[in-house]
Image (cartoon, rainbow, N blue to C red; front, top):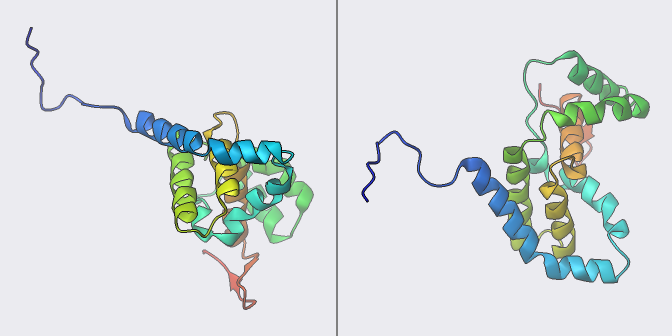
Length: 167
């Protein structure tokens, strides 16, 4: 039986399916590191490092929209005045907007590149990939949103002490 394929019909897997498969394959290839981490007592030693990745690697920060809604404005204000309670109250809500498969795959690709370049520890990369695979929430994604908000609020300093801002 022959089937006619029109030029406009999509072929192959969707971008979402490709992103999901990429993350899953990278997590599977990281199983040895995850098993070692588990045998050594778990991921507890790596959590702070995981949350600090967007500070170490600026490409892990998300791109914030130019137009700011009230929730993002509250987060930016909390970052500007260094109000930890305000940050805690808003970061989860704001981060949900960025918790797309495409954004998690973008972050995963950066993590894999950094790992392959030898800049990022393989165990930490494995934990980051496992975190990014989650459909419900991602600690790394929240940290990436927070870092972007701190940059926008002018609260990030370079190693030489200069303030970084993205206005």
